[in-house]
Image 1 (cartoon, rainbow, N blue to C red):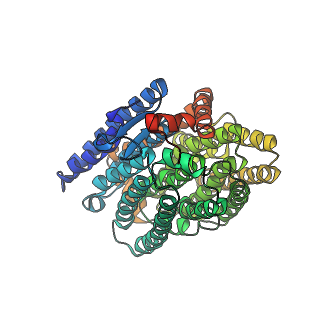
Image 2 (cartoon, rainbow, N blue to C red):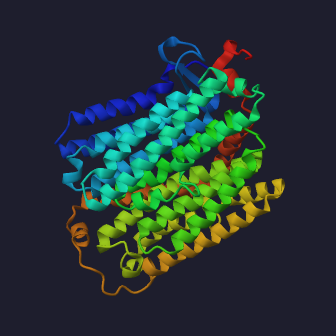
Image 3 (cartoon, rainbow, N blue to C red):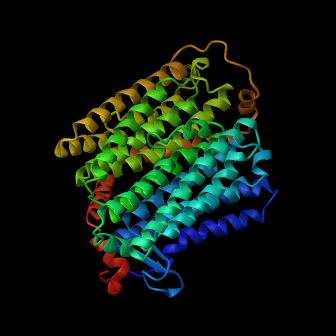
Amino acid sequence: MINNLTILPIVFQFLAGIILLFCWGKIGIQKTLSILLSLISVGIAIWMFDTTWKQGIQISHAGNWDSPFGISFVSDVFGATMVLLASLSGLAVSMFASGSLRKERIQFGFFPILHYLLMGLMGAFLAGDIFNLYVWFEVVIISSFVLLTLGGKKKQLEGAMKYVSLNLLASSLFLVGIGFIYGLTGTLNFADVALKIAEIPNRGLVNATAGIFFVAFGIKSAIFPLYFWLPAAYHTPPAAVSAIFGGLMTKLGVYSIIRCFTLMFGGDEFLGPLFSVVAGLTILTGGMGALLQKSMNKTFGYLIICHIGFIMAGFGMFTELAIMGAVFYLIHDIVVKTNLFMISGLVLKMNGTENIHELGGMYRNHALLSLLLAIPLFSLVGFPPLSGFWSKIFLIQGGLESREFFLIGAIILGSFLTLWVVGKIWLEVFWKKAENLPKQADGKYFHQMSAANRWLMVFPIFFLASVSLFIGLGAEHIIEVSRKISSDLMDTGPYIQAVLGNQITQP
């Protein structure tokens, strides 16, 4: 259905960034406006999801040029869900940043850049052609690089250089892949490519093109063996930045893999084994890397890698049940990972360190807060009936259905590694008696903060913990959404028909 309001989430974030730029130097106004604008963005995302769910795929053609000739923005249930999750994470991070960031960082334009980052993410989730997806990737890279370097500390700059170098390499490969696609099909519209690429007799060339995209998106997703940049970059910026990165940045790469490979390369014999092997190794290397870390942020960074493997495993199995489990896990993981990095930032502010072995006594001194923080931690593990449990059940069932016993073993082992890591964090940080905590400025800073700022740090954690509880306890709703998305990904005919309509032609 043609609906020019499909681009509203993107335009709104663009305008939000401009409004905040006009408030440069007015920190209090920026904080208030960012939270208010993020709240409106959630409302827009809910409206888009509801419209897409009830009325079907929504399409907007830039300049009224029909597909495949013009630039299309497409809101299917998958894209609308990702926009909604980005909006929820953006609201939480906007609040957390308002309470936790110092004036010096905010003065350099944190809030406008945050909204431009969200604009790039939403543009990518709604892109209807592959070059448009590339453009939004570049918007995200530029915005994220600025956020990574805010403050200018040596570790931040080192992490930012590793991050931007690898992502520029990925973008270059992405652009090469786009050139191959255009050379093969003469089009860049996802739906049109899906029709034409299936008719190409030279499957070796198609597989080579798929390999280029896989490496490009694999770097951005931090899959094995392309993940080494992530732990080096994600622990260096402030917790508010790490939170939006941990929740959404790698998921953009995963979304791109899912979108491109189900539409353009789905069901290829070359891809299934590749996805399966990479997924299994990503789970194992990420989980084992997390075991060796002392920093909470680095631990969570390696768990991002481990759990990206869970999502990839579902697409390696490539059955509707397994893909449903992967989509469910993607929804759960965005919420939980965003929350975990905010938790790490809160612990740092309260204790002056995030070194697991130097912490302790959190439960004794802050029992209610510790119970709140336990929700995302144990949701990550997948204790029933929390959010991580259901997706793993579907993934294992999908593995049994497709007889992917290697992936089943990797998922089970990855779950035990996650349990071990989270158990260690709980015992060290919350349960053991506090001894010789370092008296650093950040620890003192938290107790000198106003009650409003402390509330702004705790409430977004409560907000996302509540979302996690809803995902777990109201799993039937998420299952319904995940089943619809998996069905659409397995049968791309309705997407192609909705985008091209009467323009459908055979090559």
